[in-house]
Length: 279
Length: 269
Image (cartoon, rainbow over all chains, first blue to last red; front, side):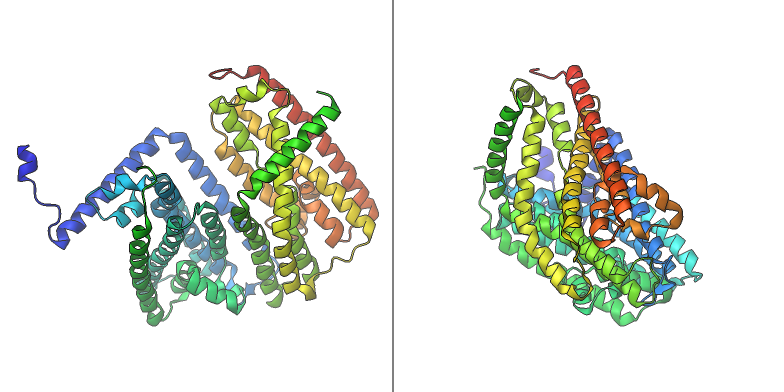
């Protein structure tokens, strides 16, 4: 009782809130590590499947460029860089976001959100980061290695500016895709199930294995503005293999900030519709 | 059970599964969009390569026609029972089916046929739109006998895929979890069946193996009969090989299923 009486109030300064949520995320990450240690066979399966997937992703690229030297300005090495970044991006999304988005339908239709709503944390943050899969870090690392091999094959050595640009655009692309994925998952507040929509979204993300310039102009717009694959793979690959305009870097950050703000509005709108299914 | 009894049972089960499929009609739209999306992206990528001067062993008409039909054929020959079957074994729910006169595999076959009938209705308009979009590079004007061969070949391809799924799912009698294995197999089949890239585009050194390996007969062979203009002799040889593989896979599935049932033990069994 004495401990409770002397604890600091939860709603302190913004900095206190940030550190409290950082501690929460760390606890979730530790829990994820413990879980993976318990299900080791599952972690090994993830690693093996990740390797097979990236190997299979290479097949069409190797075949495609066995018939031509370049496609719309992209060489084989450039596309391998892009494929590696795609692998890293899908690994990062699977590690930090994926399982949480799959869980959204259960939260809503089974009323599991009740137990989360009474917790003294930002619920949107908690729902988006509760489940972490550390085993997917291997796929992120494999993707980065493949991208590295691609860079070596281009014969260029990216400098600090290119690496900074690529990192900023890549992380902005991650935020944009996570927001798009979350927005689809929030449809669970209006629809019975969104699993098939999320599956379709994951299939659409496979298009990110290729530069957007390979597609007709209408699809380029789609993969830049609606499903922002261009920011996740094409632009970072261009940045690391030759540099891009700082305006594009700034635009990617601005789009990411707008996407987070819009997602916050959507969440606030969605949560008002929630009526418990369990009580 | 006699064959007429099995026939009546299957008819009834198909009817039940069709009415159950109706409950998931919204989901089927997204499933079928996914089925069309992969081939659509492939067409665009290979057309970009051709526009950039790629010198392919097949022309643009072959590739586009192949990918337009790919969605339909892959859906018709698909099977999805292995993880469900392994789940029934793991959780002991198979016990209920073992006490019934009709096998659980009849239920799975009925589910497969009913869902495909429903999916075909949803898929066809999408494929027609896809084909219309690329109408200048699609040629499906094959004589009727070739289409008949395709029909028979798709039936046998579905038989191979279904039997392969039974074999994989039956491993659940001995293994606790087959999900990883099923996903790895699906990725492998995607390459060897010609779903990822038409087998005609594989390198010369791999062509001999690609022609005789069994996964070609799940997907690629029926497509080659229509869009590849295969000579009669090669069609006859392909069909003979497909009949052999179908028989082998069915016998393998029957054998492993019977062996598995004998070793089955579960709570309530």
